Length: 281
Image (tube, rainbow, N blue to C red; front, side):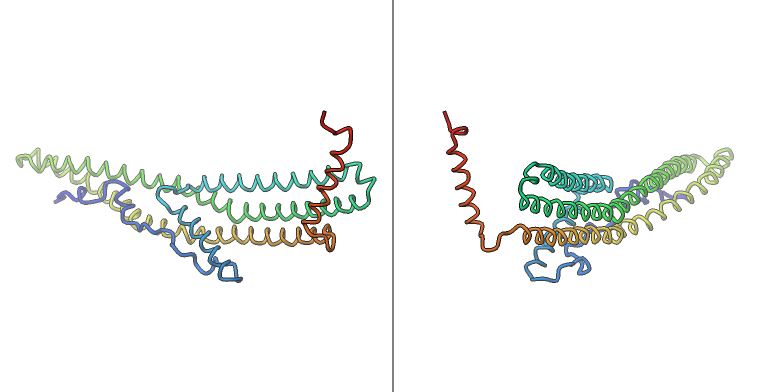
């Protein structure tokens, strides 16, 4: 007896996915990702930032594919590289300015700026390389899983269609009068159905077992990449703080606050405006 087993089995992949939990991403950030050991305000700010980031990734209405994540990160890294290369070009252009030949103090200032910009560019390249290796490449590898996964789903759907078709054939003969030819055809139909049913049940069981495991393993797979992304940013901006702190100490004039500099600049600008060659007609 075959009954109507196929009607009781899941028909589409939506029934498989409905068995999966909605909260695939945690609402709270694991302590392993908490990289800040400073004040409670810093920790709270970081947790708020990271929680919002992960919640957007897990939101059904705003769920990005690995390809979209990869493209966004690539664009971000390209923008960072463009910014640092532009900063280096600015300092090189200043070094070629004739003022550097006329004023030693100005040359020293621009040389310090050029050194800082080159250090910034070097650290930025290290950050880009690290993110490429530990974040973008894993995203690319994860995306390569989906063609095989989609093919497994299609094979299961095809097996279900074959199962339904042969089961309908068996049920048609079961409803007919039990004559010799009908019984012979019924026996043949049941024999054809048996391997098809076994094939479908095997494919269906495989997806029911492995799809939840695949979905539940996503955060475990991506968490090291997220942590690496955050660490790369923390290291980079820590170095930037040090580089520009050193640069500030080299350029700052002792005992000259910003208000005094502003007054001096305004006085110089007034002197320039007083020149006849720049006076308004």
